[in-house]
Length: 377
Image (cartoon, rainbow, N blue to C red; front, side):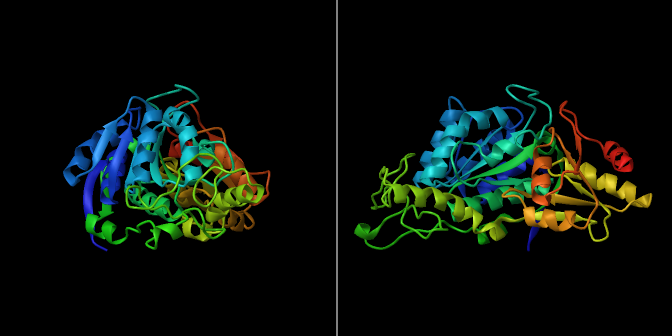
């Protein structure tokens, strides 16, 4: 694969990834610490015939993005925790109507205004169920500058494959981190673009929501001669509202199963020095960088620690977590919240003795803190 060397920040790389992945519309509203995504993409999109619009608020931003997605464009928005809260209702609309889009969330302290300029990983559970109702969210989490780019690219392909919103989590530290990243070239990225499916038969035979029980809808772009209905209500094969019992049941079950039955396509994780590990550290995002440094220190002292890092956060790599926790006695989850993914590790492992190292004061967790906690174990 052809590669290029780029010196940039995580936020800027997420914007570049969107453009290289074929995004043609960005609807946003500036919100610390994600604002650089919109700043950069507002320069890049017009050069390729795309459009960036700053809306009046985060609600308007997600609505504009959904509209562009209905028209067949690859679309994107960027925000932080409070913006995700405002976008929640319309993320649910995109789940129900099956409109693909990418939402990059650069996490900061919360709830509410919280610590706007400081780091947090407090949106893990929010990203699992950003809106009410039954569906399965797809959420990716970047753990390096390279992944701020590559996971955003992957998000666009997954959004079109599963016809739903895909969330990419960065955190303030990795979003504002400035350094060298080795990226695939734009030409390589374009080779890997997976376009959404289209129906090309007679218009009278087109039923966008008539699909297999584990498959997404096939939504042709608007204005291309095919007629159907968009709604947030339960709907029939044409998209028109219905309360028919079996139609409603099948619809909601399909929204769940189109992801649940294809988790093998989504699962992604990293294992660092796990081959002979006696202590497993679970960390993600910028915290995983500190965890790797701590593991190098621990190994020098003869303590066999290793890292398991989920990259696809939701659906979580539960089977792999259990595989490791069945063999390893000591497990430590390190995260910048009070245990949001820790609860998932407990669930996946069926264990209640999973240790945790948590921090919620807006400051990063240092390798020294992780080393000290592991030695306590």
